[in-house]
Length: 250
Image 1 (tube, rainbow, N blue to C red):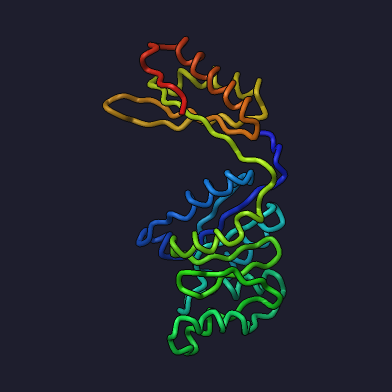
Image 2 (image 1 turned 30 degrees about the vertical axis):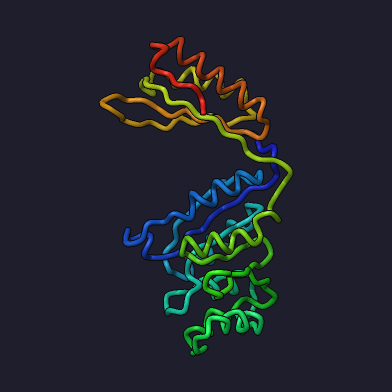
């Protein structure tokens, strides 16, 4: 898809618990959908271990490459919560105790022991991201937004700055299920993709009710073009097989 929108994003999911399979990430799907509604294309996502070198290297690479970088995880009170420290290092800033963050944490009514105060340390000059659920704030440094890993908290944090990411249009998406093998539809889809280069045409195979098929997705910034192309996709697929095997686009 040609990048009609200049704004792109990368999500860095941080935590050994994700890589081990003990915790299932649900933040990526949420962020991808929310960003698309604001015309921001989620161009890449990575899952990173709790390793300083890995996090710093990924952060520096991605913040230079994309308009926005959103991290989730690693900003809690335990020894393996190292995201804030890594971001400070990546930006060559000191990690400092932020008095406004201390005020936020004090709202919980819990004693601010050293472990909880760790969550009030942010890179020097960072802007806090409000957390209405647990009071421990996230933060922003330049184009990097740092969120908690807990899905409900990450969503609450995202809602406080989401509208600031807008670029004047949504990314529209239409899709249709086709009960034909991907090998049969690959060339026709490629022909359409070459002809309509301002949209992205994706094919995602499935096996359902004993039959192979694919969910075909058309995405783009121009709703009328997306609508035109999905209709062409449907017409093309019907020419390749039984009309009853193709549903209406949704």
